[in-house]
Structure formats: structure tokens, C-alpha cells
Image (cartoon, rainbow, N blue to C red):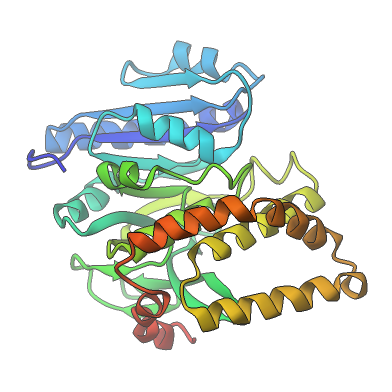
Length: 341
């Protein structure tokens, strides 16, 4: 991390055929960058990585964005993880703010995220995402629990900052805090660039999308690094504006289940958890005809083809491990009580 009092920031936005989304949401990112530049005297760059779009994204950015916004145009689509990794490698500054192309941000978002990185143990800080129509919580801090053979990673908790605020969670003052989150969402989280590079970025086996941020987050926690939730860093997100309209439900579920299996085979380090996982997966496989779940069957076949490579990655991760799965899960027990777990 830089010795500057307020680190410079690289905003990385992967996009694929998302010109219409950037037209709507990029202005809020530019505004937040200018607020941080003005108030903290630090530099901000915005790196948009275009994953082979055919809608004129690169041309539109070049013609309409300010000089600190750069677009990198890839030759063809590869998926989220490889595209984000291009942005990680291009980023020049010690804090990387990774955003989906369909996310709007509050003007002060960087002012709340960046101070966390004065703690050298912090790997990432994730935002509070609200539904732009209802202003209700869409994504908060993520609780980590291992149940029925899998990590349960998408249960939210929230921090109530104001009286009368409509959210479920722990009530605290607006003071600076260190609230943990199992997951640093790939759609709206800030990262320590040096630590991201140490991990090699996202695992590009997890293409085209889903579970790559879970894998990265588990690898960071296992090294003893922190992921925090910052409820004052507010963004607005309508889910699946890029993926949902362009892919079939079968394709999306197959990709998600395949990647979920690979992430568990790579990161489960408690042997009783791994045994439970194998038993559950076997039961799911045997009941595919009964459940008519052919997407899971296709996902399992694809994942098994990757097993030798994933097992080698598993050995590498174990050699760098400081915390085990139960150590990570234990961090969330107090919050689980408040969130109704």
C-alpha cells in the first residue's frame, strides 16, 4: 500500500455489450471519482475493460468519457473473470474498486471505502447495495456458514445507521467499524491491489460467470486477510441486467453449479466437511432423473473434467493457508444470531 495519506484508486469496470448500461451508470462513477480527487487530493483512474462487445462500447467511451477514463477493447468475449483480470493487471494504483457495468454509486462511496486499507490485514471492502426502485437492501455483509455440504455465502446482514431505517440487522452508530463479510462481491467491492496480484486475481477456470468472487474471497480469508462490509458505502444495483437477458436459464444454472463445485473442491479443507460434500453431491447426482435436474448433471460432468487441475490448485492453496474453514465460519457466529441464523 502507498505511503500517501489517501491512496490513489483504480476503478475497474468489466463490460460486455453494455453500452446502454454505461450510458446510465458511468456518470455516477465519474462523479464519485471527482469527489475523491477534490476532497483527498488523490488520483483516480477508471479502466473499462470491454469483453469483445459489438455495440460500440469502446467508441462511445472514447467520445464521451473524461480523460481519466480509459477503455481496453478485447478481441473476443471470454467471461467475467478473464476480463476483470485484464483490468487488475492494467490498474496502476494501490486500491482497486471493481464495479459491474450496471451499478450506480453514491458520490461519497470512495471516501468510505478507502480508509479501511490503512489496516494492512484488509484484503477487500464490500459495499451496501440497494435496489434503486425501492431503496431496500439488495446486498449487505455476507454471512459464512457451512451447511449440508456447501458453503452458504449469500445470506445478508446489515448495519442500521439511522433511526427508522428499514433493514434487518445489527443496530450500531455510524462510527467507523470493521464488520466482516465472507464475500467481497465482484460487482461492487474495493480491493488491495498488491494482495489481488499475490492471489493471481480471479480463477479463470470459473468462466463465463458466477462464484469467481467466492473463490477469491475464500482464498483471501484462508491467508488470514480480512474482508469487511462498509454500510456507508452505498451503491444501487439491479441484478442480472447483463446475464439474465442474454443466456438461457439452463446455461446460467449449469455455469453456476459447475463453478460452485469447482470452488468447493478447491477450497474445502476440513476433511469431515469434504466428506459431507461428497455424500451430498453423490445424492444429488443419483436423483437427477427424479428431480429432472439435467443442468446439474451437465455441470457435474464439466466439473469432473477439471478435477485434476483443481486438485493441483487445492494443494497450492493449502500450502499458503493460515486459517481453516472452521476458523472463518466462527467469525460469523455472533452476527448469525442477530441476522436470524
